[in-house]
Length: 507
Ligand SMILES: *Cc1c(COP(=O)(O)O)cnc(C)c1O
Image (cartoon, rainbow, N blue to C red; front, side, top):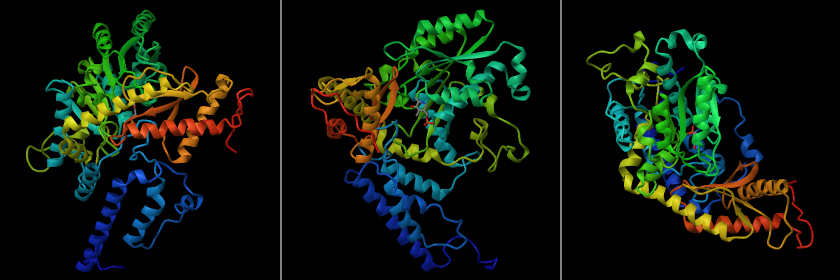
């Protein structure tokens, strides 16, 4: 056993410190090389079985050298990630990250701050973020906010704040079941709302049946007449409407619900108005995009992600609440070991642990702060506007290409389309086209050239391109479309005009 006096996990001698420092420089250099040469790599590649198996080994009792662990990172982890830093990653809605964000993560880890509470400058960095978001969305000085993992968590917390506000703080003791005597709570969100909103109803004990799914119109936005009719019907049935969720940037098509009109309904009906702005809300940073979000400033709470259009490295979600008192009412709890004092390290209440469920919390605010100050909102807003302009450019090319069909209007940065088969070929039926497009997207992934994802719109499989990465250019869209047409034609081989298309399936 080591001596009690000398044992720690730090390097033992000045020479050991020097070795770690040199290795650290090599690790940083490798990441700079990686980020500055992303285009030379495939966006994604399948994980070889032996690489996967390398991470199925026994718990190590003896140490390996830092250099060896780093070597394994470079060889076995880095090449087989999702690839969302790559300019031709266009799948799902993933942010690209920045080099400044990466460096901030390193600084935050070195400080190893715990942002549950106490009187420390890192909390002032988070509070600065809250005030910035308060001002960006035109919220009053009473507003509160909290950095969380992502919008799934921010939406859940928004539902919990609205629930406690409606049932009263006593409901935290009596539980949701006790309110079963009173009228049952019901809430509203469009069919196009993200799955995590329904999940929030499951987790919160309200039940997913308490979330009414309101139909959308041809524009993929919440149908306001249907919303009003459902609320009226629910009141007649003796239920208690308490919350309406609007989406600023739906995950499927990027549609933005009419937030101003939903705010009107919420005011008239006395409902809490929550906005899921996971990626779209930060469109406020762009003068071109912000007008599409009109009405968001009237929300009672907003969920958003800095790790999507904000380009902050994962994870960095955020909840903004119009009145911090509602947030405190939902989450603050007394605990002897968390008692506050007017001075010393236990000063500075309220703490983040009073505003959400987490006690120990990392210093997410540092990478958010670094990203905002080192780029400024003009540049971050320009990156957001660029995504939208690229989406319009892609839309125009799809409309002009006879073998492609646009499947949804393009509002922000998401383009949904499908490949119909090579020119001159006899048409495929809808189910075969669904299959063809799903296989084609997998082909694209395996080609490493470009990574879109799929979704289902009106029952049909769509190729979905979500432009979020600040590194994506018009030339990257060209590579994507060329690959779609080339790999699509290859998959339909042989396809003489007079024969039915033969869609190959992956063996
Ligand atoms: C991404 C997304 C979410 C979920 O956010 P996470 O950060 O992945 O938890 C919720 N709603 C919308 C509209 C999204 O795009």
